[in-house]
Length: 487
Image 1: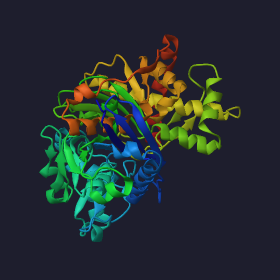
Image 2: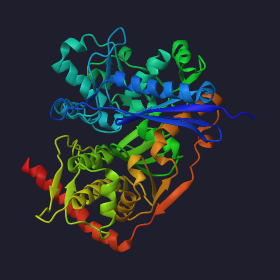
Image 3: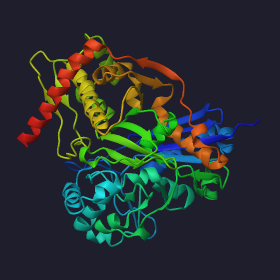
Image 4: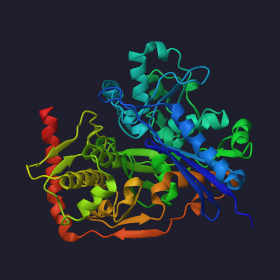
């Protein structure tokens, strides 16, 4: 029997990643193109949406040259993408301004206003408003760029702008829509009250589908350029965290940590269980009839990339120097809030801090502090999930940061729980998007498709280090409170 291949595209923050996977789940091709982020001022974070299209075109063109037979046999496309970004389009579907990203904090006042005036919406929308969500950004746009707001005809999320290019359709799906602060999570539909609160009309929103449904079909001109079949289905897809869950088979159960540019501690389930007081995100999953609880951290592996750039040495070399140090807490502490923080603080003004440095502090001490500081943030996330009644026994780790066995071991020691790494876990969202494409095309049950991949290894927590790290986590929390008071 011929095995049908499916293409998964992940429109990330640092890169576009793509895989072609057959029904036996063999990866037939993969590609990656880096993306640039602009920071035109304090707290601002933007990308050019056309850069996403250019990155996809480069990958497809390379495959067309080197893997033409594989590309020509693709039967469907699935999409994953960074969440919360605002792609504002005019009547000709042209961007009105650069995309305001998930880690942009310009809408601090607007988010606070929404939470003050509409506190009940947090229970309907799964979480209180935060500056990085799409809805407060549109309220900011109406206040600060009214001439652009007057020309607004459509608001899309990042991966859905790529969908528009692929299919000509304005469509989103439940899991990505969940992070906009416009979706009624229980009803799985746009909330008219939330739209009205931010000056947006339903006609300006995308049509909603489930992640496993067909959202549109590939345009003939795109197919012709790259040797794809015209008219093949494009699945609804998922936000990157939910696509990562599909990639590792976390549908009804299976907690995992996503250690990408940002970080998430993610637990799926069959019920909608909001807990907005702790800024836990209760969102729709990409699978019909499923929801998730998620602690969202704005600072993940991006902190390590930042620190490596600061000292001017490759990440691999720096990690090797840290690994050569004695195991356990280092002398320097780092607050990793380079882009503010969401869970549990909802504090867009939080900043990064190194504490405990002396004249003898070296670069390896700083890098260890960064690894541990991100791990302490995940300890805060785990505490919020447990307070919400979620039992955490073990978890998986995916994302680019999962490439580092050292970092995963530090996380295991800090959290006091076994952490699994899966083979291919760093490409989880693109792989999950390919699985959603398969479900849309074949009609198979996604639960049967989304099995768990082979385990690469397991980091077991070391009891004596977990105890030592517990004292550091308490100090980490005190340090944040002290810096908050100082502001």
